[in-house]
Length: 277
Ligand code: SAM
Image 1: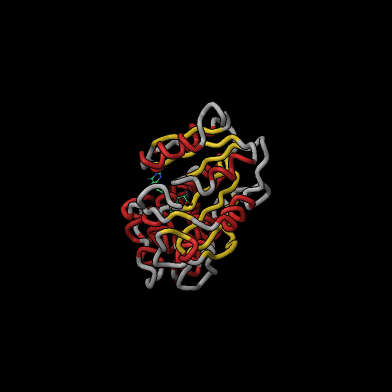
Image 2 (image 1 turned 90 degrees about the vertical axis):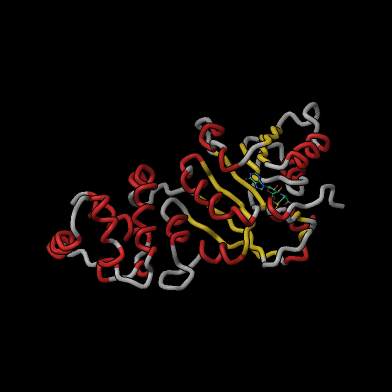
């Protein structure tokens, strides 16, 4: 039974299949020592299962009706491992909440906000251990795309710089109320770069590297020589011609390629080259 009338404007498609809910929560492999953030708990399809693990859970929900419902389902005097915040996740400080610890994030996302939520998580990746997120399949495909395909783009590079994304399983519309128009997918994200090259550099320069990635994909049919003229000028204060001759001297051959031909490590190398010019 659905206890509140779903609002389309808030992306409310409530999960009604208990087995799927269990499968999603199981992917987070929670113990009582974990610290978890649930984005958009809604009527609590995942919340009760998360609480059963004994983990410390903070839920962030924008809809006051859902917050009131959750408070009555999970009263504070019975669930001392739960904090329910009536808040907009986009205004919420993951880092402040984590307070130096690594958090796990879970959510069946409101699809109107999927990209925004993903970038917010990526930008806070240093305090996130992993995330299990349900989203529209089209976005899941972009996160897990292969080099030189039409789905390979800003999102693919954005997740693979600090971590990686894995497609777990699909969920048909019939498992939600109301049924979304699209197929959904559960994605797991991990942000453990220990031992990978350049991990400290990527941590500290992530936001700037992403500016380069966005500029590169802005005109994805063009070569980087053409698409990056503006970025090179504004970021490094240099003309493209000067950069190209320096690139030739240093055997850097990215500029004749298109954005979708560079892997995430190439973007780090290209960023360093432009920054150090
Ligand atoms: N977790 C529930 C479930 O699986 O049935 C609800 C999922 S529903 C797809 C998305 C939820 O995100 C809704 O409860 C909606 O109110 C909430 N939401 C939408 N925008 C939000 C925002 N900016 N911050 C926090 N929650 C939001």
